Image (cartoon, rainbow, N blue to C red; front, side, top):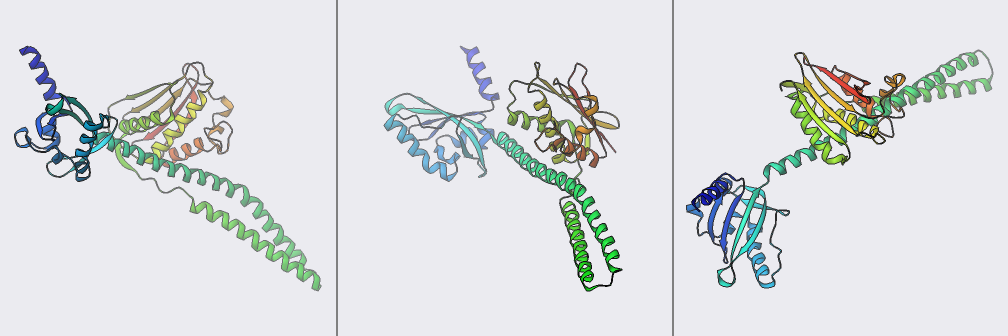
Length: 364
Protein backbone atom coordinates (compact mmCIF):
# COMPACT_ATOMS: atom_id res chain seq x y z
CA UNK A 1 0.00 0.00 0.00
CA UNK A 2 2.81 2.38 0.96
CA UNK A 3 4.60 1.49 -2.29
CA UNK A 4 1.50 2.36 -4.37
CA UNK A 5 1.16 5.65 -2.51
CA UNK A 6 4.83 6.48 -3.22
CA UNK A 7 4.33 5.75 -6.91
CA UNK A 8 1.19 7.91 -6.97
CA UNK A 9 2.98 10.77 -5.17
CA UNK A 10 5.86 10.57 -7.66
CA UNK A 11 3.48 10.70 -10.61
CA UNK A 12 1.60 13.65 -9.16
CA UNK A 13 4.76 15.58 -8.35
CA UNK A 14 6.42 15.13 -11.75
CA UNK A 15 3.43 15.21 -14.11
CA UNK A 16 2.99 18.25 -16.39
CA UNK A 17 -0.71 18.69 -15.58
CA UNK A 18 -2.41 20.36 -12.63
CA UNK A 19 -4.96 18.31 -10.71
CA UNK A 20 -7.61 20.19 -8.77
CA UNK A 21 -10.48 18.75 -6.71
CA UNK A 22 -13.45 20.95 -5.88
CA UNK A 23 -16.71 20.46 -4.03
CA UNK A 24 -20.27 21.07 -5.26
CA UNK A 25 -19.99 24.79 -4.53
CA UNK A 26 -16.69 25.15 -6.38
CA UNK A 27 -14.38 25.44 -3.34
CA UNK A 28 -10.89 24.04 -3.90
CA UNK A 29 -10.19 20.91 -1.84
CA UNK A 30 -6.94 19.62 -3.40
CA UNK A 31 -4.24 21.41 -5.40
CA UNK A 32 -1.98 18.69 -6.81
CA UNK A 33 0.42 17.85 -9.60
CA UNK A 34 1.82 20.89 -11.38
CA UNK A 35 -0.92 23.14 -9.97
CA UNK A 36 1.35 25.28 -7.79
CA UNK A 37 3.86 25.87 -10.57
CA UNK A 38 1.17 26.47 -13.19
CA UNK A 39 -1.00 28.89 -11.23
CA UNK A 40 1.70 30.40 -8.89
CA UNK A 41 -0.48 29.71 -5.83
CA UNK A 42 0.61 27.46 -2.97
CA UNK A 43 -1.70 24.64 -1.96
CA UNK A 44 -2.03 26.19 1.53
CA UNK A 45 -3.19 29.62 0.38
CA UNK A 46 -5.55 28.35 -2.33
CA UNK A 47 -7.29 25.70 -0.22
CA UNK A 48 -10.94 26.60 0.36
CA UNK A 49 -10.89 29.38 -2.21
CA UNK A 50 -13.49 29.40 -5.04
CA UNK A 51 -12.13 27.78 -8.18
CA UNK A 52 -13.28 30.87 -10.11
CA UNK A 53 -10.18 32.68 -8.81
CA UNK A 54 -8.19 30.56 -11.28
CA UNK A 55 -10.29 31.75 -14.22
CA UNK A 56 -10.52 34.99 -16.19
CA UNK A 57 -13.75 36.90 -15.57
CA UNK A 58 -15.57 35.56 -18.66
CA UNK A 59 -15.09 31.90 -17.73
CA UNK A 60 -15.57 32.58 -14.01
CA UNK A 61 -19.03 34.06 -14.65
CA UNK A 62 -20.06 31.00 -16.64
CA UNK A 63 -18.55 28.28 -14.44
CA UNK A 64 -21.43 27.97 -11.99
CA UNK A 65 -23.87 27.75 -14.88
CA UNK A 66 -21.90 24.87 -16.42
CA UNK A 67 -21.99 22.93 -13.16
CA UNK A 68 -25.69 23.60 -12.55
CA UNK A 69 -26.62 22.51 -16.07
CA UNK A 70 -24.61 19.32 -15.63
CA UNK A 71 -26.24 18.44 -12.31
CA UNK A 72 -29.78 19.32 -13.32
CA UNK A 73 -29.83 17.80 -16.80
CA UNK A 74 -27.06 15.19 -16.49
CA UNK A 75 -25.74 16.77 -19.66
CA UNK A 76 -21.97 16.14 -19.98
CA UNK A 77 -21.20 19.55 -21.44
CA UNK A 78 -18.33 20.23 -19.05
CA UNK A 79 -15.05 20.92 -20.87
CA UNK A 80 -12.85 18.07 -22.03
CA UNK A 81 -9.30 18.01 -23.43
CA UNK A 82 -10.49 18.80 -26.94
CA UNK A 83 -11.93 22.12 -25.83
CA UNK A 84 -9.37 24.93 -25.27
CA UNK A 85 -10.20 27.41 -22.48
CA UNK A 86 -8.41 30.14 -20.53
CA UNK A 87 -6.98 30.12 -17.00
CA UNK A 88 -5.48 32.84 -14.81
CA UNK A 89 -2.28 32.82 -12.77
CA UNK A 90 -1.82 34.56 -9.42
CA UNK A 91 -0.24 37.60 -11.12
CA UNK A 92 -3.28 37.97 -13.40
CA UNK A 93 -1.64 36.45 -16.49
CA UNK A 94 -4.20 34.66 -18.67
CA UNK A 95 -2.99 31.55 -20.52
CA UNK A 96 -4.59 28.84 -22.68
CA UNK A 97 -5.44 25.47 -21.14
CA UNK A 98 -7.26 22.25 -21.87
CA UNK A 99 -9.39 20.82 -19.10
CA UNK A 100 -10.87 17.37 -18.46
CA UNK A 101 -13.40 17.04 -15.63
CA UNK A 102 -14.79 13.97 -13.92
CA UNK A 103 -17.42 13.64 -11.20
CA UNK A 104 -16.98 11.88 -7.87
CA UNK A 105 -19.75 10.89 -5.47
CA UNK A 106 -23.48 11.50 -5.49
CA UNK A 107 -26.05 13.83 -4.01
CA UNK A 108 -24.78 16.35 -1.47
CA UNK A 109 -21.33 14.75 -1.52
CA UNK A 110 -20.70 15.27 -5.20
CA UNK A 111 -17.24 16.57 -6.13
CA UNK A 112 -15.32 17.26 -9.32
CA UNK A 113 -11.73 16.51 -10.25
CA UNK A 114 -10.19 18.59 -13.00
CA UNK A 115 -7.00 17.86 -14.91
CA UNK A 116 -5.65 21.09 -16.38
CA UNK A 117 -3.05 21.13 -19.14
CA UNK A 118 -1.13 24.31 -20.01
CA UNK A 119 -1.06 24.55 -23.83
CA UNK A 120 0.80 27.87 -24.06
CA UNK A 121 3.74 26.36 -25.93
CA UNK A 122 1.51 24.47 -28.34
CA UNK A 123 -0.54 27.61 -29.03
CA UNK A 124 2.60 29.67 -29.62
CA UNK A 125 3.96 27.02 -31.97
CA UNK A 126 0.71 26.96 -33.91
CA UNK A 127 0.74 30.77 -34.18
CA UNK A 128 4.35 30.73 -35.32
CA UNK A 129 3.56 28.12 -37.97
CA UNK A 130 0.56 30.16 -39.15
CA UNK A 131 2.71 33.30 -39.32
CA UNK A 132 5.38 31.42 -41.26
CA UNK A 133 2.76 30.07 -43.63
CA UNK A 134 1.33 33.56 -44.14
CA UNK A 135 4.79 35.00 -44.86
CA UNK A 136 5.45 32.11 -47.21
CA UNK A 137 2.20 32.65 -49.11
CA UNK A 138 3.07 36.32 -49.62
CA UNK A 139 6.60 35.48 -50.71
CA UNK A 140 5.38 32.81 -53.12
CA UNK A 141 2.89 35.18 -54.73
CA UNK A 142 5.49 37.91 -55.04
CA UNK A 143 8.03 35.49 -56.49
CA UNK A 144 5.54 34.17 -59.02
CA UNK A 145 4.68 37.72 -60.08
CA UNK A 146 8.38 38.57 -60.29
CA UNK A 147 9.09 35.59 -62.53
CA UNK A 148 6.06 36.38 -64.65
CA UNK A 149 6.95 40.06 -65.03
CA UNK A 150 10.56 39.15 -65.86
CA UNK A 151 9.39 36.84 -68.63
CA UNK A 152 6.92 39.43 -69.93
CA UNK A 153 9.63 42.07 -69.97
CA UNK A 154 12.02 39.74 -71.76
CA UNK A 155 9.50 38.58 -74.34
CA UNK A 156 7.88 41.96 -75.07
CA UNK A 157 10.81 44.33 -74.90
CA UNK A 158 12.51 42.86 -77.94
CA UNK A 159 9.56 43.18 -80.37
CA UNK A 160 8.64 46.57 -78.95
CA UNK A 161 12.20 47.76 -79.47
CA UNK A 162 12.09 46.42 -83.00
CA UNK A 163 8.83 48.28 -83.68
CA UNK A 164 10.38 51.49 -82.41
CA UNK A 165 13.47 50.98 -84.60
CA UNK A 166 11.38 50.23 -87.69
CA UNK A 167 9.28 53.32 -87.04
CA UNK A 168 12.40 55.43 -86.66
CA UNK A 169 13.65 54.16 -90.01
CA UNK A 170 10.27 54.76 -91.63
CA UNK A 171 10.21 58.28 -90.23
CA UNK A 172 13.64 59.04 -91.72
CA UNK A 173 12.70 57.74 -95.14
CA UNK A 174 9.35 59.52 -95.20
CA UNK A 175 11.00 62.77 -94.16
CA UNK A 176 12.90 62.81 -97.48
CA UNK A 177 9.67 63.13 -99.43
CA UNK A 178 8.17 66.60 -99.74
CA UNK A 179 4.40 66.20 -99.83
CA UNK A 180 1.72 67.13 -97.33
CA UNK A 181 0.33 63.63 -97.27
CA UNK A 182 3.72 62.21 -96.47
CA UNK A 183 4.14 64.66 -93.59
CA UNK A 184 0.97 63.28 -92.09
CA UNK A 185 2.38 59.77 -92.35
CA UNK A 186 5.57 60.94 -90.72
CA UNK A 187 3.59 62.28 -87.78
CA UNK A 188 1.77 58.99 -87.42
CA UNK A 189 5.04 57.06 -87.51
CA UNK A 190 6.48 59.34 -84.84
CA UNK A 191 3.50 58.77 -82.57
CA UNK A 192 3.66 55.00 -83.12
CA UNK A 193 7.31 54.99 -82.13
CA UNK A 194 6.51 56.99 -78.98
CA UNK A 195 3.78 54.52 -78.00
CA UNK A 196 6.05 51.55 -78.58
CA UNK A 197 8.68 53.09 -76.32
CA UNK A 198 5.99 53.87 -73.74
CA UNK A 199 4.87 50.23 -73.72
CA UNK A 200 8.46 49.13 -73.23
CA UNK A 201 8.96 51.53 -70.32
CA UNK A 202 5.74 50.30 -68.68
CA UNK A 203 6.92 46.69 -68.82
CA UNK A 204 10.33 47.68 -67.48
CA UNK A 205 8.72 49.60 -64.62
CA UNK A 206 6.54 46.58 -63.83
CA UNK A 207 9.61 44.39 -63.57
CA UNK A 208 11.36 46.92 -61.30
CA UNK A 209 8.27 47.25 -59.09
CA UNK A 210 7.96 43.50 -58.61
CA UNK A 211 11.67 42.85 -58.26
CA UNK A 212 12.39 40.73 -55.19
CA UNK A 213 13.22 42.68 -52.06
CA UNK A 214 16.67 42.47 -50.53
CA UNK A 215 17.06 39.30 -48.53
CA UNK A 216 16.76 39.67 -44.78
CA UNK A 217 19.85 37.83 -43.57
CA UNK A 218 19.69 36.98 -39.88
CA UNK A 219 21.75 34.53 -37.84
CA UNK A 220 19.91 31.36 -36.89
CA UNK A 221 20.26 27.63 -36.34
CA UNK A 222 20.13 26.04 -39.81
CA UNK A 223 19.06 22.64 -38.47
CA UNK A 224 16.28 24.16 -36.36
CA UNK A 225 15.01 26.25 -39.29
CA UNK A 226 14.75 23.15 -41.50
CA UNK A 227 13.10 21.24 -38.65
CA UNK A 228 10.43 23.93 -38.22
CA UNK A 229 9.70 24.15 -41.95
CA UNK A 230 9.32 20.39 -42.24
CA UNK A 231 7.04 20.26 -39.17
CA UNK A 232 4.73 22.74 -40.89
CA UNK A 233 4.93 20.97 -44.25
CA UNK A 234 4.31 17.47 -42.93
CA UNK A 235 1.21 18.78 -41.14
CA UNK A 236 -0.10 20.60 -44.21
CA UNK A 237 0.65 18.45 -47.28
CA UNK A 238 -1.12 15.37 -45.92
CA UNK A 239 1.23 12.96 -47.67
CA UNK A 240 0.37 10.02 -45.45
CA UNK A 241 1.51 7.44 -48.00
CA UNK A 242 5.03 8.91 -48.22
CA UNK A 243 7.80 7.88 -45.85
CA UNK A 244 9.32 11.24 -44.88
CA UNK A 245 12.68 11.25 -43.09
CA UNK A 246 14.29 14.43 -41.74
CA UNK A 247 17.94 14.14 -40.72
CA UNK A 248 20.55 16.62 -39.51
CA UNK A 249 24.29 16.12 -39.95
CA UNK A 250 27.02 18.13 -38.26
CA UNK A 251 26.82 20.24 -35.14
CA UNK A 252 24.26 23.01 -35.14
CA UNK A 253 25.69 26.49 -35.48
CA UNK A 254 24.47 29.95 -36.34
CA UNK A 255 24.20 30.66 -40.05
CA UNK A 256 23.00 33.84 -41.75
CA UNK A 257 19.99 33.24 -44.00
CA UNK A 258 16.56 34.63 -44.80
CA UNK A 259 14.07 32.57 -42.76
CA UNK A 260 11.09 33.23 -45.04
CA UNK A 261 13.00 32.58 -48.25
CA UNK A 262 14.52 29.36 -46.87
CA UNK A 263 10.97 28.27 -45.96
CA UNK A 264 9.84 29.11 -49.48
CA UNK A 265 12.75 27.31 -51.16
CA UNK A 266 12.38 24.15 -49.08
CA UNK A 267 8.61 24.17 -49.58
CA UNK A 268 9.05 24.39 -53.35
CA UNK A 269 11.55 21.54 -53.40
CA UNK A 270 9.43 19.32 -51.14
CA UNK A 271 6.23 19.91 -53.11
CA UNK A 272 8.13 19.19 -56.31
CA UNK A 273 9.33 15.89 -54.81
CA UNK A 274 5.83 14.99 -53.58
CA UNK A 275 4.53 15.52 -57.11
CA UNK A 276 7.32 13.31 -58.48
CA UNK A 277 6.33 10.53 -56.05
CA UNK A 278 2.71 10.36 -57.26
CA UNK A 279 3.30 7.34 -59.49
CA UNK A 280 6.31 5.86 -57.68
CA UNK A 281 6.07 2.36 -56.23
CA UNK A 282 8.38 3.17 -53.32
CA UNK A 283 7.52 6.57 -51.90
CA UNK A 284 10.28 7.93 -49.73
CA UNK A 285 11.42 11.49 -49.19
CA UNK A 286 14.59 12.29 -47.25
CA UNK A 287 15.33 15.86 -46.15
CA UNK A 288 18.93 16.35 -45.01
CA UNK A 289 20.48 19.47 -43.52
CA UNK A 290 24.24 19.34 -43.11
CA UNK A 291 26.56 21.87 -41.50
CA UNK A 292 30.17 21.74 -42.61
CA UNK A 293 33.20 23.90 -41.84
CA UNK A 294 32.67 26.56 -44.51
CA UNK A 295 29.19 25.84 -45.86
CA UNK A 296 25.80 24.34 -45.20
CA UNK A 297 23.89 22.01 -47.48
CA UNK A 298 20.25 21.10 -47.86
CA UNK A 299 19.35 17.93 -49.77
CA UNK A 300 15.91 16.81 -50.87
CA UNK A 301 16.07 13.20 -52.05
CA UNK A 302 13.10 11.36 -53.53
CA UNK A 303 12.50 7.91 -55.02
CA UNK A 304 10.54 9.23 -57.98
CA UNK A 305 11.33 8.82 -61.70
CA UNK A 306 14.28 11.21 -61.56
CA UNK A 307 15.17 14.01 -63.97
CA UNK A 308 16.53 13.22 -67.47
CA UNK A 309 20.06 14.46 -68.16
CA UNK A 310 18.90 16.85 -70.88
CA UNK A 311 16.41 18.39 -68.45
CA UNK A 312 18.62 18.86 -65.38
CA UNK A 313 19.43 22.47 -66.23
CA UNK A 314 16.29 23.64 -67.97
CA UNK A 315 14.05 22.37 -65.16
CA UNK A 316 15.00 25.50 -63.21
CA UNK A 317 13.79 27.81 -65.98
CA UNK A 318 10.44 29.56 -65.73
CA UNK A 319 7.38 28.02 -67.41
CA UNK A 320 9.04 24.63 -67.89
CA UNK A 321 6.61 21.71 -68.02
CA UNK A 322 7.22 19.32 -65.18
CA UNK A 323 8.00 21.93 -62.56
CA UNK A 324 6.16 21.74 -59.27
CA UNK A 325 3.30 24.11 -60.12
CA UNK A 326 1.13 24.75 -63.12
CA UNK A 327 2.93 27.96 -63.99
CA UNK A 328 6.29 26.20 -63.83
CA UNK A 329 7.69 28.85 -61.48
CA UNK A 330 8.49 26.90 -58.29
CA UNK A 331 11.95 25.66 -59.18
CA UNK A 332 12.80 28.95 -60.91
CA UNK A 333 11.94 30.77 -57.68
CA UNK A 334 14.07 28.31 -55.69
CA UNK A 335 17.00 28.95 -58.03
CA UNK A 336 16.58 32.71 -57.62
CA UNK A 337 16.56 32.39 -53.81
CA UNK A 338 19.74 30.29 -53.90
CA UNK A 339 21.45 32.88 -56.07
CA UNK A 340 20.36 35.71 -53.74
CA UNK A 341 22.14 33.85 -50.92
CA UNK A 342 25.29 33.46 -53.08
CA UNK A 343 24.56 29.75 -53.10
CA UNK A 344 24.13 27.02 -55.68
CA UNK A 345 21.13 24.82 -56.44
CA UNK A 346 21.24 21.86 -58.77
CA UNK A 347 19.74 18.41 -59.30
CA UNK A 348 21.48 15.08 -59.76
CA UNK A 349 20.57 11.42 -59.87
CA UNK A 350 19.83 9.72 -56.57
CA UNK A 351 22.04 6.84 -55.37
CA UNK A 352 19.19 4.36 -55.92
CA UNK A 353 17.23 6.21 -58.58
CA UNK A 354 15.06 9.24 -58.15
CA UNK A 355 16.45 12.74 -57.84
CA UNK A 356 18.49 14.73 -55.33
CA UNK A 357 18.06 18.49 -55.25
CA UNK A 358 21.08 20.03 -53.55
CA UNK A 359 21.39 23.54 -52.13
CA UNK A 360 24.79 24.69 -50.89
CA UNK A 361 25.20 28.04 -49.10
CA UNK A 362 28.53 29.52 -48.02
CA UNK A 363 28.91 30.48 -44.38
CA UNK A 364 30.72 33.73 -45.15
